[in-house]
Image (cartoon, rainbow, N blue to C red; front, side, top):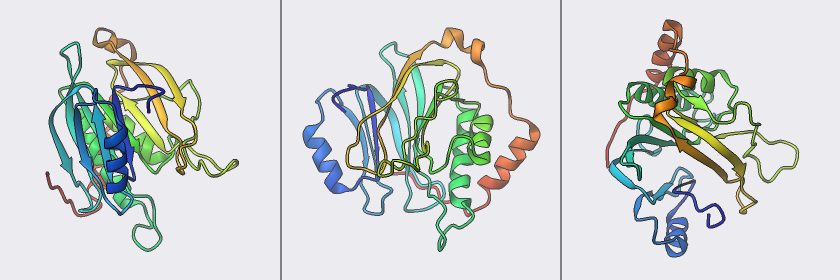
Length: 235
């Protein structure tokens, strides 16, 4: 955390103990935060040096799985839209077909596509970047994968030297440029930390504008988004 001195920090799978420890150690520069500590492995803590505008905690699919939706005011006085997510993985007894995860991702994709502001989506997706679901997500969202052309940056499982996959992602709209991507060192978690340095260049957005989603992609995303009963509560 201190090594990279990032402007925005996201911690997932965090409970009250994590929150208390981070609050004690974190720099006073992080004046803005949204804290949703939970004991169910879906707790989420967001810290920012930049002003957060109208932050909301939403439960798009499951009443126990939050996502954070907020606008961020950059030092340039530009406003961007940030979504932080941690959808549930496939679980044999609860969600064997990944329907909850896919539904949350497609709901966020639709919000991203309709946003009037440049968009960042970050979090633990519980899915690899090349899967059909994640590919559909960023195509429908009209976002770019910062890993493309750079490497895999496998974040999970930090406890294994052989079986590792990229499950933690940062997707950006075309107004951003990815300048640096790296993994942090082992922090006694099953995930490695991820760091990304971005440059905000809205004047160059046309140079890397993603293709518009096809009608088939939009229909598939809609079907997946409606695949579970919608739960949406603000805090």
